[in-house]
Image 1: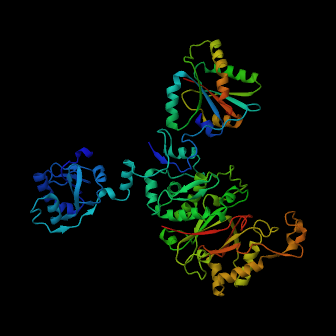
Image 2 (image 1 turned 90 degrees about the vertical axis):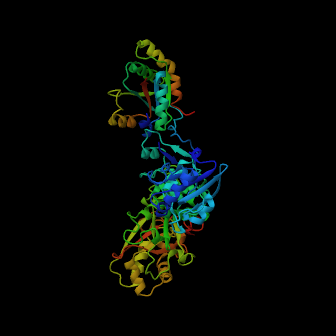
Length: 69
Length: 91
Length: 480
């Protein structure tokens, strides 16, 4: 993500809630403040329909981080 | 850990700020980068469909493996082809 | 640490690498035995052998806290406070302080001490940083454990494109040693953000640029000069034209810091030339917030915007230095800043007399910016030693050359009219019948620089808004 932003491409990351601590630590050590949306863990054992629902549920949050304001 | 003195007028925050975002997404191309964790593709493909429904141009990309950073040619290609990126699904 | 210091009692600080400490070692041994003297050793924990209970102060924490400057230092504490100290070996003083008579009977009466380790250059800065006594006010930026220092500085936008020296607290403290000025003294407000340029902030940028502490006074003078209203720094930064500040250094400081006024003076390779000019640019970028494609709208810019600083070749010149011409006392170190760009080379390897050489110079001068524009801009003419020799041998003063060049830069108005010579650029038809000079009065400055071989002088072009309504050159004294 930091690499793409360094190339001028605003980036939004999507991660499961399991990744929150890791994201905070990595951000601190890299000196960045990434735009992140968290979806509830777990992901790996969900059905296709559940995953599509997760995407629908978090679309607005993702879009909000892609525009100004 | 190295401590440096700030050479600037200190009017901006110390953490590297995010890139400014555009006012609106119309007319822009959105890249969706699958970082290759299991099942992330279903989630991301659905995001892509929903964005298409809103009339937004979407391009899908995928890392060859989750265990390494995206290869340089892929990053360069993405930077050349899209205006914004959604990257996922980390856990 | 401080709990090791006695409430009441004697303390001595020594180092092995000090003949006086070695001399006094037996006395220290006796005092340790008889009065409970505590001895701290700065360099070698096996010294002094005469004091088995000596304490290792190689970290110099105690020495720093006690503000030791000379070893040996002997201190007496009473009720937790210092009641007196003496340094070096002096029988009378040691006896007075300790209350013990007959010390060091076979020693000389007195022997001076040596410099203490904790005040050696480099060490004192490290200690100040460790004890948070730097007095530095700039915000601290912590570089993450996984961040590369260079990438971190690039990512924060501090760089002109080239690598920077990381401005650690120690480096900035050492840089500030290069001046006696107060680190919080404000030299002015830097455009476009109009942010205050303190000596400290300038020092941070000077470190990044690669300056040595002894360059700092020159950097400070250059910053003061560009912040003078008549230099019009905001305009110089914001213009679509080519210019950036060019710094010419005069006076003894050139030799003191090893600047280059000779071969390749306007090129690369000399640290002082390179770093001083660069420090000024970094100040504009980082303190002022002036950056390309933001407030800096230069279409092409010019390579001098990385750094453009050189020393005038004053030695054996028959011409007065630029600073003297501009009012500084002879022998005073000074900088002159000029809104300039590039280098237009003048090749003349055949002129044997000053008249011919002047015509050569003038023909090139007339082409700055455009042959169709007059007045065009100011110009800084850099005359190489071989060309200067031609004028010197003919007995031409600088004033004589100025006079000749101005005369030769009078242009018939017809040549300047838009459309003349098949070029659309130019002025109104009313110029017909008039004579226009390429330069405003005072618009040419002359300096001598360059290697001794080569008949190649050069013109540093100026800004079309040069002059009283735009940018005027400014000369400032270099203050230590």
